[in-house]
Length: 281
Image 1 (cartoon, rainbow, N blue to C red):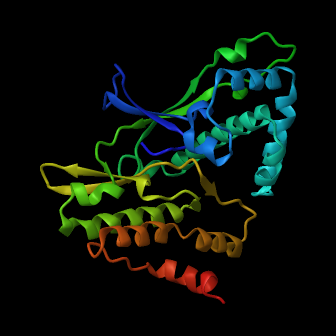
Image 2: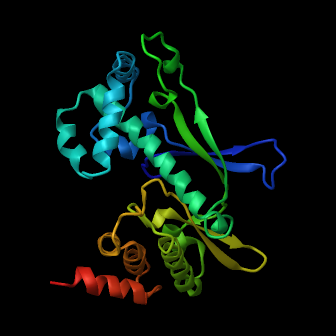
């Protein structure tokens, strides 16, 4: 898999559920390769964990997590400047904070899209917490499990291929509809006041029905979504939607990739956003 903020494990459970095969998605800062790269954290090591453990157990992590929560809500770029001065332990703390935030966000998105589960997004079966032995190290403070636990979600397993690999797995005559279905999913989710800051072609799984010879598209990865605040104006929300251009992030990329096999035409709403914000100069 590509570097990511989370890790996926295909797993089998012996429970009375419609399926016995699931995907366990874990937000584990230690092995979140892309997240560590983005924040210049380097590869995880036991030595780094020792530094982080000391940072938590001497009480420093509490104030640091509070700072992250306060700043993230109002200054989206603060971490890039502040991070230049962080110690390794502070950097590790920010990674842990981010993993918790991504998992909570993903859970909130699934809760808001429950009627779409099993159709255009996987079913969410359960929230998961993996306990860490670091949390049981003697300390003078009562420590929340958030500082060490690895959060995750248990999802329906969608057997298929990434949208990126459509040319290798689907007939050319199906490319147009498959890509249009992916764009339609983006816009359906956007209609629920959800904006995805990390839309990529790998965010879609295409499943083939071998009997009907048809294809179904599912969207995954909602950890970096933004849910609209109640006090956010329509203007501000639309401005951010235009800057993000989720639809174009798929449409234009796939049009270039498929070299004539897919023609991207913006939806009317996307055209309005572009006219209102991106082309105003």
